[in-house]
Amino acid sequence: MADHIRPAGIFDTTYEQDIALNRTRTDKFLQYGGLVALLLIPLLTSRSFLGLNILPDYVVVTINTIAIFVIAAQGLNILIGYTGQISLGHAAFMAVGAYSGALLAKGFAIPIGESMLQIGPFSFWIALPLAALFTGLVGLLFGLPSLRVKGFYLAMATLAAQFIIPWIIEHPLQPYTNAPEILQGIPQPTIGPLVFARPIEMYYIIVPLSVLLMLASRNIMRTRVGRAFISIRDNDLAAELLGINVFWYKLQSFFLSSLYAGIAGALIAFERNAITTETFSLETSIALLAMLVIGGAGYPKAALFGVAFVRLLTDVIIPAIGPAFNSTLTALLPFVDGTNIGPSLQPIIFGVALVIFLIFEPRGLAYRWEVLRIAWKIRPFAN
Figure 1 (tube, rainbow, N blue to C red):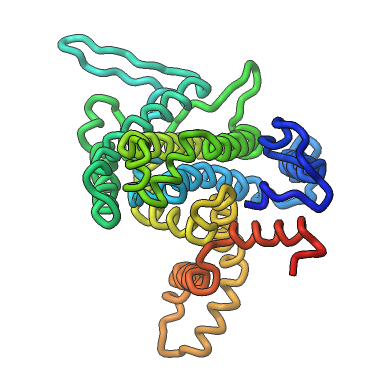
Figure 2 (figure 1 turned 120 degrees about the horizontal axis):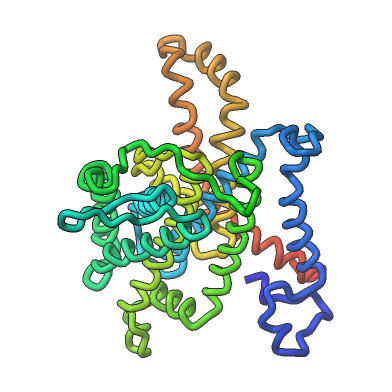
């Protein structure tokens, strides 16, 4: 929205300027400067080779988690925000990416008759894209109901994935892939002698990949495919009358959404070096939906704003204010067991924040950010 508006006195003179993502020098400076600053953050912690200890070490872990969930939420934004197809099983597709990526990196054997077919082990750089493609194909299977159903019924169809996929991982696959519910000992990414074993090292894989995938998603929306997605979201009947193959583009949306989820799940596996199906529960799928609601589904930066807000709220703010709230509520509510207040604090605050956004900012943080950017660009005529 704000990308199509120029400050007063600035005009496009070439086609290249018109289609550029960063159209002014200020935009380029802010984008590239922000990326450089983001890549310098690990160097300011005590675990870097500089040992500066300017920032606490947990900042790197927090940013890694945010970047991974930004990838997953961006995939869900393609499906829900741009194509208008609901999904309640996004975390299950993350599980597919996590387990397939881990198994490809560790290697496994499939029985064929009396012999065993050995698959892998593959390096991280091969296992990650293979896991993403496999997850995309799995997403196509659960996208098939979109031909006949929509809305609530499609939500129920995708919810089935949230129960079917973890059950398949925990039961039928075990005899063939030796993939227990908890998978450990996942080989770490390497580049020659470099081994990315710690969070501070995985940071330089996760964060650049997250940035690239966000740019890719933003560019997809500028193509014919992206415009078809938006047409289907706005009015699928009108889109079909205009000659758009609605079912085909819906399947493409499910594929891209699942591919993003597979990348996010695989990164979780390699970053934590251990995965369990409990990590990809229905609660995670609901949390991803909440992140889109807060961020503003349908906007390019919705995933970034939504994930950053939710993760900072749950991982930083609530733990910081938790003890004070716990003691205050214990004094105000003496009839409530104090041991029950602490575990209940996070879902209560998260639920209240979600309700506040639905009432006062239903379009999300990304929409408000776009409004502020437009007001800044057209100053002093913002009013």
